[in-house]
Length: 401
Image (cartoon, rainbow, N blue to C red; front, side, top):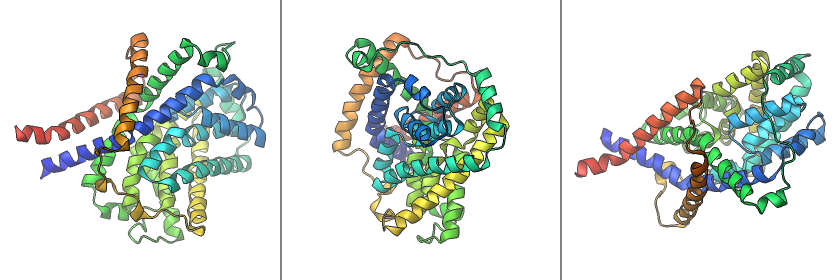
């Protein structure tokens, strides 16, 4: 029975990734095209103020620069060090991790259109709440000290005189950059995705529904009251803090949580929490100091809870809360059917082989773990996850032999 459960968990993990592969490929291809053909120099010059124009442009540029949390942190530090206002910098950070194309596509695959709308509308609410909270609460002198530290430590550089996008898009060099960017997108997230999908398969197989009903108060009722919904908007970020999986890896886990009775608000808060996990907090502290890092984390947590509550009751007021029965649970899915998912995956396998092969021919594999202990830990966990999945999938073959 234990071996059967191992096989079930591994099959669930592999199936979840198979369902989402084309969505990852499409999202990263679009993100790579935008990042290669849209200049960041224009972004930087437009974000020095703190008014609505600067915040709006920062949000738009963040959407264009969609990336994983760690890449977004580095870009935000560079923009802030070079003069971007604190609110536009935080708006850029939030937009580049929450208003991302690939995240919306993957959420649509696993959770449905209401969560996609919630992700994008909620992302804008999150930025608005952060703007107001910073405006009302930022301590005197904190931003200046954080900017001084960011300027001392920032070593980023950007080339001058980048070619116009019209010239670049017609050149081999432009598409070579797209290939490198596409491979780098996968390189930044493969560990988080591997761990996240493995955790989702394990939880779907081994964790009983009663656990979620205990952890997320009110989830057993199907109709939680205000205080229970409020509690879930706090528990969601706490659960994300414990798992410290990136936003992409959290999506299949969010589907498991939703299937087990967690409210719309709790799921939205969980999905928004990729910027309040410990590795991110540690990096923020290295960039700006612990006082600034803890202040930003506190602002984000409060903004996440407020945004999730507004979304939940806004959707409820219009009768748009997602129907749990209409969203297929993880165990109900036919992962490997001959359908549109198969053909889309085959198409993006070809795209990935072409772009990834181009990147490998020129740059090789490179150092995937870097020098950071957190990256090394993630690499070990990702490799263990791969071993677990491969072993579980092989169980029927071993016993058949």
